[in-house]
Length: 254
Image 1: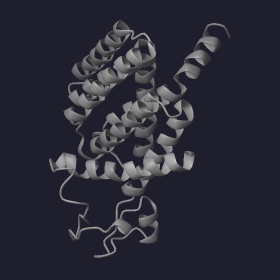
Image 2 (image 1 turned 180 degrees about the horizontal axis):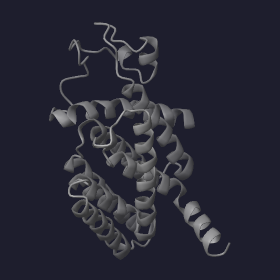
Image 3 (image 1 turned 45 degrees about the vertical axis):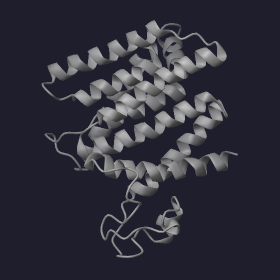
């Protein structure tokens, strides 16, 4: 079953690549059908097999021979792995549908922000709407209480903190980052939102130092923060309880 979930995730990952390419260009994600961005040749089904087509074609377009960005198999592989992890944790459930959907949206946001330094408002809005629908679905189907106050406080806390940082840094933090952390905070609640924010700065610092050492970025270059927020969110979602438990036991009960 896990293999099927991975394959399903990889197939969805192929569609995510279409979104990453077309959304910043304000193109339809449905029409026209997939084609080579270099020679515009429409791609056949056997050119679109997730991961395998890239490997079999040796990373080149079958028609014009131009190199294909490694982003394509990376996104497919990443989405497949995340879907498999979420399925392992939640099984066939509403939770799996929600969190796998959120993971896919965050992958799109991360790559768009990395390439273009923008976070589309529509994707953040979809994230928040899905979160609201998910919480009410749990309430209706499973009678699970929806702590709306905690979610709203988390949304306000995340947004306020990033707004203060944006003002203090004079634009170092973008409006897209503020909206993104607010939407994700609504999902996590106050306690895990604080962890998400802390981890995003830690991860961001490590990656930034790494890029500076490799001379991929200079000291004055802008490094998009959205991917760090999203990596921290995934980490918080999967390991947040254990991290918080470790922190409390080490620093307060040690």
